[in-house]
Length: 386
Ligand code: PLP
Image (cartoon, rainbow, N blue to C red):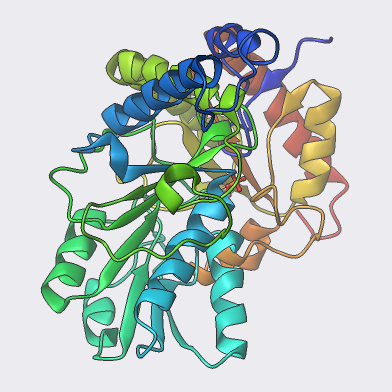
């Protein structure tokens, strides 16, 4: 396959070769069912538990039993919210933000149609919520506060320590969608009063179709998928053993590299960002620059169409994104950037570059060489007037 410069790692990541190697035996020799009584299945059970320990260790959870394997980040988000609403049937209020991933926001919208009240907290131009608005939104009817840790489009980090503390003091369950932050920033669940936290494998070099939900010991929990007794009756369905093993290896690799790789990725991201802002007039970073994931930059190029930029970058073998992968294709302007009040002429031409540990200096140089002429060319033919 042709070599591409892949900078769309918030959409999905390459599976780590080490994870693929570790998964292989589970498609051939080690195909037992971890729930079986026989030794053949029992051996596989041990591998599942080893993976659970790796996930727990990456996020600094006190007990591996606090990890439930799911099929993806979306399932983890849905499980966290639905479980809490079922656990507190008398409470009918949800607090979230206007910039959540569709896995949360569309579920909240659905819950409004079945009688729930939802507060969607606003964000400022930096992409940040107002803590006072959060505080004043909590009332005796609030069942759950569900606020993401890192935004998938801008990389902006919400202060989950502070939010978790507010939730704890007010006696409300707090769920955070940490799909984009796990593996990119250090987390220590033993120090963070977060009750539920969503994780997705394919964002951290594990395969697609595997996720996890952290459930703090003592949190009221009611399963979303009902059936067999897998995952201690918290998530029915025969475990996706190969992917669970792959996730375990991916977590170990991330944990090992969290310091060095984070610094390397951040240096590449900063180099890319600085060069593009310098070389392209009328361009800006969307969102806060300090409180941000180290791998993400969302740059708005005024007077151009993001889709046109993507297509021309594609011709130069650069794969990036003009918003969240789930919303691109609709051609409607990004909800996240709109909620931030970014001027429309910038929203239209916003591109997200999201790096991983597999990106190199050469990749960044390739983008720096090719993107500015693309913007110049598009502006020459732009109907917006520049
Ligand atoms: N939450 C966030 C913040 C995401 O970025 C994504 C995926 O892009 C998801 C949830 C959904 O995760 P998955 O694709 O594993 O369902």
